Structure formats: structure tokens, C-alpha cells
Image 1 (cartoon, rainbow, N blue to C red):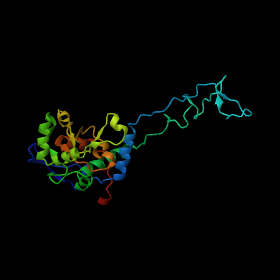
Image 2 (cartoon, helix red, strand yellow):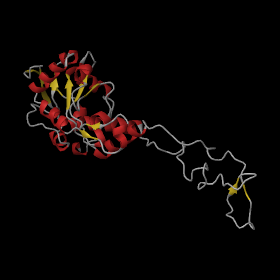
Image 3 (tube, one colour):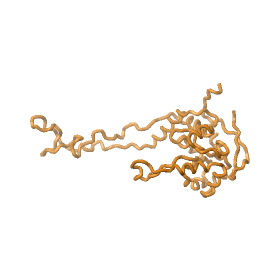
Image 4 (cartoon, rainbow, N blue to C red):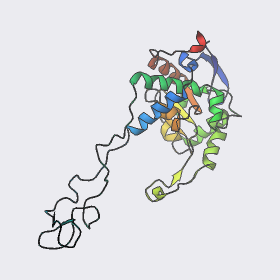
Length: 266
């Protein structure tokens, strides 16, 4: 059944209604979403390993038996061991290899279906609440606003709009959850970890990205670049997502060819 939802203006008033595309009624597949998220995250990894000849650039040979010493390779004209892992300057026993398989693959149709499934989860209050988002004051799941949101260029204006729509409580939840990272990542330019909060999906970026980028946990993306990692961080579906009207229309065109099998419709 098609779902009719309200469209809000920047002051939080209802100005229109639209019918959500069928993709927002697709069954939520957490297993498929996790597979797609893993595939996208591993595709960002860069293969790394040691030089295959590291520690092997030597002519050292073992003396053999009968000398009362260990049969490890030794440098010519001396007694110092070389080449073996336990020797100074020797090779590593089990070095990282660039040909190690570190990427998980997923079929293209499965990935698109996972994205549609993650979109459907953003329209289900149960999944949104299960992720820990503060949705008590949110007027509607998913919240949809007019296209004027895309042209906002000041952070204070974004904050005013989010407060009018009841979304500011979740941004403050992310701000309170910001903490110092455990481990050596503190020394490598990623000292803090911030929980994910609101995702803003627009049809075009006319300044909203710069206006919202400093809000804790808030991400901005376009409907054309939207992927399952944005919708389900960590593989957990149901991120609190704010759409513009034009973004809804573009998503409907982008995924109109995705075939969704719903056993409940049989």
C-alpha cells in the first residue's frame, strides 16, 4: 500500500503531502544490508605488504654440520647469521602480502537491493528507534521538507530548521556521545569518535553541505551518491534521515528498476 506523508516547510509547518515511492515499502533485509556494507567498506582498503626481497639480499649460506654451531645461513667470510627470521636484518617470518584477499565482493543487483532495503528501514520508526536515535519529538518518520533546505548556507539556520522539525535532540545525543578514541588512533589524526546522527539527503548541494558539516554526527549527501553505508552505518539499518521533495523524486527514478520480492504480498 502506498504511504502518504506530509511535507514540511523550514518552520515545521505542513505545506503539502506526497506519496512515498514503492521502494520505501520494501522488506528490510538486515543480512543483505550487512553484506553490502562490508563489501563497500572493504573496497576502500589499500593492499599493503613488505618488499618480497626484504632481508633476502645476501649471499649467506649454511656451513652444514660438523662445526658445532647452528646450521643457519652465515655471511661469507664471517660468522654472523643472516637471511633467517631470527637473525638481525633477516627476512620476516610471516610478512603482510599485497596479494592477500582483503576485499569482499557483492553482486550489483544485490547491492542495489540492499540500498533499497536500507531506504525502507529509514521509513520504519521501529528500526530508527532501535538504532538509538531520539525520535520522540520528530513529527514524522521519515521527515520530508521543501527544496529550500538545499540553499541554506549558515549553520545557525540549519539548527533552527532541525529544531522546528524535532530533529535537534538527536544531534545533541551525538554531541554528548563524542569521546576520545581508544588506542593509537589518538596519535594519528582521529582522536575523537562521534556517534552517527542525522543524514540529510538532497537532490543538489547548493550550500547545505557546508552549513551542516560542523554539526556532530550529521552527514549530507545527494540522492545520486546515496549508498548503503550512509543509510546503515556499521551495517545497522534505520538511520534517522531527512529528505527533500526533489531527493525523493530522484530516488524513485534511480531505483525504479529494482525488483523487490515481498513475501507478504503473496
